[in-house]
Length: 429
View 1 (tube, rainbow, N blue to C red):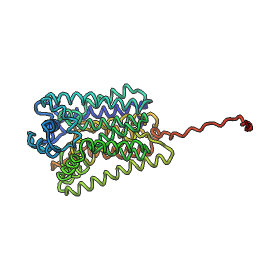
View 2: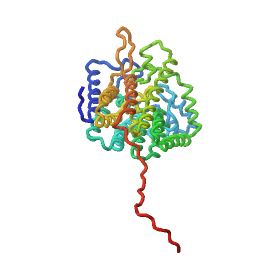
View 3: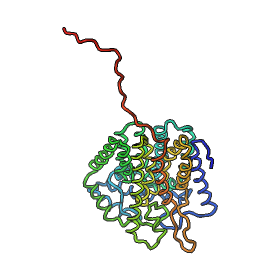
View 4: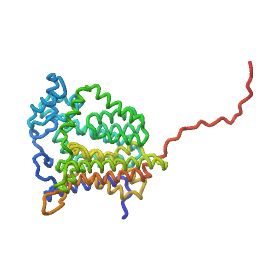
């Protein structure tokens, strides 16, 4: 099959799938199954009924400003003030980050937070495009096409509705990758370390830094995480960790927006044991992570050097397969990989079929088509997102191993040429 030569083709394919998915939902009325907790995003939501994830953080901020003595006090008092009675699940650094919004009403806080999301996430995406892909042809068109996908992404709309802060974690990770592309390893590692301190999912970038031998950035990442741990209070952070581990009941949560592998198993096999599904999901994730790292190492041994900023974007799908459901709201953070695919499309025509497949999966992840029918006689569904992310992770490992477009020769130390003029005899004084 002959595919177009334009490097913008992967972005065009992803955009086409995103639009087609929205049309399918509107015409055929498919997508999200009925669920009290997770509903399809409303195109025009009522401002009074949204922002659930932000509201619990606002309650925690109010408790902090009232002089709470410890994180446990903040967590339990925020639960008593929350209209859904939820226990506050986020680390102390998030309490401090969102506390200024607690001076505002819930409605105004959601408006401010939503505006920051719509400004800062696209800014981080464009910064990554400019610094990590300076030679990409048609960068303007690539930026416009990718931002159009972001504007149509069902996950972005859901993130906006619920007022979740996950986009800040993803934006910091992306800024870190952009800084890596400029050779600024210390601030790059610090940005990724701060993201990990807020939510652990970007920790998948740490082994990528090690595999690509950016040891200074990896060390900076660890140091930044430790600094946040100390500044926000070791005692409070330990209280958060104890609460997190004691309240965990497993990742098997059969919801349309849960992208974990355990959830996919739950849909396919309704009677499966939750602990078994967790172990299988974690094992599969570990294999996919190992495949990407092995690909990076093997490519390097073969004399090909994959830019860490590109490898990091290829690792983003691995953030989605073992965490709790809320991270699934940020599937729009997969979009930076489209720039990597565009780069590869231009330089390696023999890899265009793999690029096209990855672009189609990326576009599918932006649609409201959360699940497909498995058995006509039963309500069991298999999340498309979970399977798409597995496919993306496999393609990422293949690209990292075989892609000549992203395999740049390692920089060699410059050797000063020796002078051709023979030295004269030494003279005494």
